[in-house]
Length: 314
Length: 322
Image: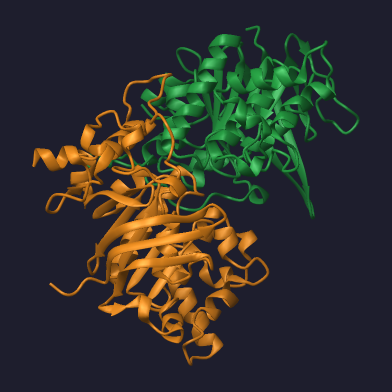
């Protein structure tokens, strides 16, 4: 499939005293124009590292990445060199990612200062971007500390959209926001996507959000995708026991909701001591001897879904 | 029935700022009976944190209690001498904070920190370590003896938060205040921590004041719930009643906004239009009226009081119906 972004067998390795750890362990994914891929997983599963690698902020140990038709080159240290005008990042820490000494107007003008793109009135452009994300002109002269959490997210999104990118990588775009404001930010992303055909890669651990915003999803555990495919299918019938556990763990606001949870035992293993075989076998309720011995190869489901499990659900 | 562990009546707290006095809490009342888990739910700026600070008397220097009482087992906390208040904190009343990475000291081992919280005990270090180990075991931490020698950064987020809970429960408090203790955790760990907290609460028999903006967590854990908006209690009652039959328009909207509650996949998530009122220029009448779809003339002029018996809501519409 000719995707906007196509990643094959990507690995990221961090050096460690006395060795190294594979933080991203052979990941493949595709993002299409106008579609959203969600990457889900617990803290430390490698989600943010994957995003940073795609933006060229940490070096790759292995893998091929195609973006907008061509294979991306790497610099001498192994970092990808995507065209920064076409790929934008919305950072997890919304307020921290905005310079505290710049007004919103200056923050929004900065991308065009770095990548000059024709004669555009910087002031007009800042106001256009603000209205694109549903903020009024009065925000332009404020400093980041004068913004609420939701406003800071919107400014971060406006800055990401300043150069009309093809792909947006959003790292936990709604973490820490109240439910009513979370809806506003997500609705905004959906609107911008339908207007511009933006491809979105969203990283989150909030499954309730994924269900509503993502076309496709990938579930990450210790640096690997253990299940990926159409999000509707995965939600209705997960095949990997870890996916099933994650889906059943989401606390429901309905006091009468059935609580038939899949309880996981044990701790998340450390990357330094990656379990043998299937990495999930130490916590898996379905694990048998085979699971501790060999890592299960990919199984292709009917439809576009791939999972790695010797004894899948359903 | 015995006296409640915590009883707050008409608590009003304000902050002195450059723009004048900001009333952060207005006439807040709540009761935590013995052995119960009471949840406080509300969005940023509703006064949750001010409420906790007021209870443990660690309000910011520019804050002032303008009115009201806070009684802990019948004693008036606001009138307690500072010395007695200090001995209460970390003893009879303890707190688990939101972020275990910042509430634990990064340069001290877990063992040292757990021994430190037992500073009132005359026991020696090895006896304290024994107690720490038993407590770590109770919160489900594997190999507790080895953990005592480790530093917070060597533990995962879920383990750190369980260590923080173990520390808060060391003194077997009568009241545990938990300030968004699962917000920094992932879904599977969140559920693990909640269940652990539930078990320990049953074992120890303490009461819990559980603060969260996560509706699902509150529904799962709490016996009763208090919904706050812009510094006021807008609804309270048994968790089941409030979540099943929300009466205040704000509670109704909040529940409707939770993407977990929307069964059918949608690209257009519900929101609550508008924003919190400016506390420096509070409108007359109902605090929620500017965002309320059901407002009537009376909402503009008269502030609604909590009405009802066990399940109460501060709304003129409810008042009129009953």
